[in-house]
Image (cartoon, rainbow, N blue to C red; front, side):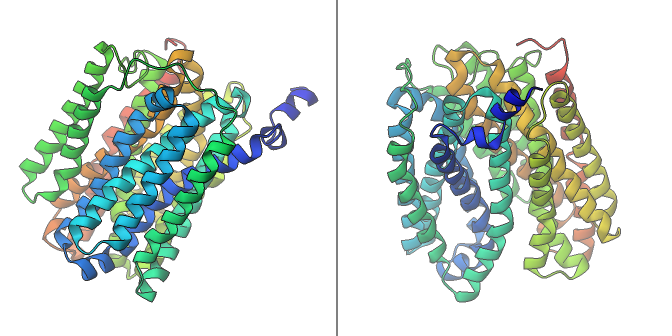
Length: 466
């Protein structure tokens, strides 16, 4: 590569020509989405003690996630209808309103409603940020921008548990939501100014309400799966959720107003294989973050904070790996996609064998391998998807990246929950149930990881259509 070409694919060039403040705004948007979705788990016991409603802990997460998915899924179309600047500013206002509702909540019902509104605002912020990346940055910078997004997610994962723990110790869990409300207001005020270079897209034919409704039903069914102690009901809800998700994709493919890019459900295309790989690989990784801390506390005597940071090895490895390959071009982008997919399968095998009774160094290695798998591959999967999109589908397809990731997270959380409950987790956390869960939470999702690796091979294969 020539010196001039190298200069055009550098961090300095990425931040040149007025792109630095736009880049900062996108990073703030990603931070708001990532941190708000991660930090709340730490403070939920204090919320329950203050407001009651321990039985609704999972709905606090599920409500946020459903709101975020529906908002993220519609972000591309809304950016076309109303313009990126106006839509992004409004998203910040909605998130601030949701945070204020949770901070002021006198009862658990108001708190849950606030979490749903937060999910909507946060999902739109994240979706519009993805649209801004596609519209404001040349293709040569996309890998570096997505590497920065990965870094922000890693920082949120590492800082979130510490901040939440400190707030709980002080007894002011409501301050968490006031902090995010203030940041959302800053984001909303800056968006109209800093997104001035984004042209308003042509007015689209409308919003795909039918697909959004079907998607909401599907995600709600999957998210509700771990609320039931009966295995048959839990497994049935997961199966029904997947079937409804596939129905949503089929309906979208025939709709006049589409939610997903053209042929997104066709696994022989770049879009189809890429989105399927994102969904399945994300779903396969969820059990480590959800059940890892509880297992480590029960079987190895870790404190909640130290267990959280042990799990943080995944995020740290993701960040380091993402930065390490940010400047890779040529044939190695396809190779890193494949390497990452294989690493994820290997990480699940290692965790299945060692999470319960194996040496802790192997547990850390398994978590780090899982994070590195995404760090090495995620930016390149995203870049291939965006490069394959037509101009007509660019806004929709870019925001769909967030939607697919969050839908995969919801599905993976439900599947891990079903596996843990079948292993005895729902009856109480004992050494026996923790040891059994340490096996089945990871073993149950290995088929998903294998399916994701297969899709990664299709994505990078010569037979895949654009």
